[in-house]
Length: 168
Length: 159
Image (tube, rainbow over all chains, first blue to last red; front, side, top):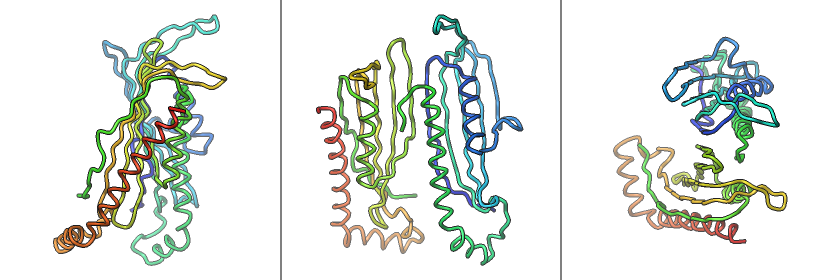
């Protein structure tokens, strides 16, 4: 059974205002692909639901993305949940042009974890596995934990940049 | 179940005026880094209401003091009814700031002394009769840390 180390648990960014939700969606997807993570939409999102309510649309999306390291032994996983409520389309004027924007409240939750023996190449009860973990990849485990922590924070910074918020 | 003692609660700092919010957050981050705390952002919540904004940020920091005590500090930063502008080419905010502080200590965070009733009993004896002075010192250090952080913030906003 692969071992998991939680790196970031349920960090949230919430924003209520007017913005282009599709643009945000696209930017985050492009960022993940650029950073060599799997395309969260390639085989369809993990979850996508859209409901029409009297106050506006309610959208729930779950992304699960990952990248493998050390021949697939490590898997850096990031889960992103979007929860949008009261979404209504409005027209705003920008630089003399009328453009369509979304007025809504969005909550984006980030969780990341490092999975060891992700490719299940090792029998974890085996002494060789314990020696491998401790003496061969021990330093790399810490290295990838830090990398995943930084990646998740950079992804969150992308969202804050989009909303013009103050970065952590 | 981890044994946790609340050391600091209901401590607040309020400020109203114009300041550099980005620099303010950096001052707090640097303070935690100087004292070897690991700091995580838990929530960043912004609402736009007309010309004004409201932002709530929740940060949680932790530090292992020794192999028995782990300190946790939680900050809630509320910036309400604020507007953004520029002063000397620097982005500033004009609004009401409230910083709330909470701190607690997790005892036996590695759960070495929880594995059996005998060990739990021995731990209770240890805490009460052997290490009481040491635990008091850890508690007092945490209180002083929160007070120093509050003073650092006060100093920054007064300068």
